[in-house]
Amino acid sequence: MRIDFLGGTGTVTGSKYLLTHHGRRLLVDCGLFQGLKQLRLHNWDPLPVDAASIDAVLLTHAHLDHSGYVPRLVKSGFRGNVYCTAATRELCQLLLPDSGWLQEEDAEYANRHGHSRHKPSLPLYTQEDARVALEAFEEIPFGHECSPWSGWSWRLQRAGHILGAASARIAWDGGSLLFSGDVGRSDDLLMRPPQTVEKADYVVVESTYGNRQHPQEDGLVELASVINRTAARGGIVVAPAFAVGRAQTLIHAIQLLKSARRIPDLPVYLNSPMAADVTGLYKNHADEHRLGAIECEAMSVQTTIVNTVEESRRLNSLSYPSVIVSASGMATGGRVLHHLKAYAPDRKNAILFAGFQAAGTRGQALVDGADAIKIHGAYVKVRAEVTNLAQFSAHADRRQLLDWLGVQHSPRRVFVTHGEPVAADAMRLAIEETYGWDCTVPEYRQSFEL
Image (cartoon, rainbow, N blue to C red):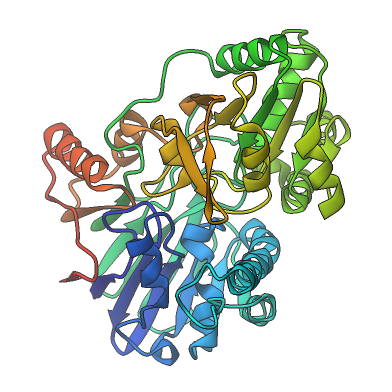
């Protein structure tokens, strides 16, 4: 078995791992590069192998850094099946066309305003490309062994993190390889803990939080503090949040605080039609999360869903304390950019992040204290309070990742991926010191024989 690391190395985005064995090729995850421009440019690079030569794709979950390249792969000639869990398929039916639409919008905006160096600016793929790609998706139940080819099999087990998220164990005649996917937390507010996974000869483990522990302070206490002091100033809380997972966590947390009367009964707006659709999916997958039917219903009923562009624009002139939850989670695009333009310059307001911010994103710049950020070609002053509550992260931290790995019995090698360089190397060192296993941080496009 040969493994090629085509993404998710030196960064938390672009996860793509190509497996080649006995004339068959399987691509595990098929994600977009995000963040720094030099990373995003990789999305336009041709793969080192012909897309048509890849027999199948196996997705660990639906976040775009793991699934967002699928339409481009299909557009480039891939004709195999895309295997994933039921919830991952349902989420991709929302995420991928939306991603295509955003790319079309960004290209059109750049052409209209002359922001692009390319004439004309083109989308990586379109909504229609995404819809065509979705026809290739095939569901695999958790725990079901899939054996599409002689000498190959794989099984998906729950990883927590978001709906449908899985770890993937792949076996072949002579060995086995476990991909962690994005590992969820044992103490997540929404999702159930990751399942214990089978042992494998090799392990590929993520390292988003490989160099840190999550804060011990109660996230609900911290969230209440931000909302209360902003409301006391008469300000607006703008919360950039991923439409899948983070938006629902924040809305649920706010409802808990309201019910306990720990914050005012102020309006909460969910300005992401996709996030609203995602929220409805929690009712269909009750076995994956901790919420009951009443709590699922409350996330929709007690929140004002903003659908139209006109409604979204009106949110930019609110005159009373409110919370706006809007995508994207790292402020890389979407409706939240317009809210940041409207509210970041005023000191009475607050910008609330809830988890990891990748290098090169506006989210990271804001968390690091930038006094201005560039939005739609112009700089916007940042005077609002900026807070990042890592307690609401959906990723396991270093200790939890080590615990997740602990069931393995001396794998031949562990590959540490999906982390920025410092975090990945810290995770490598922690694994070597804790377990004494052979551990490698692969580089972009590096390959290994297993």
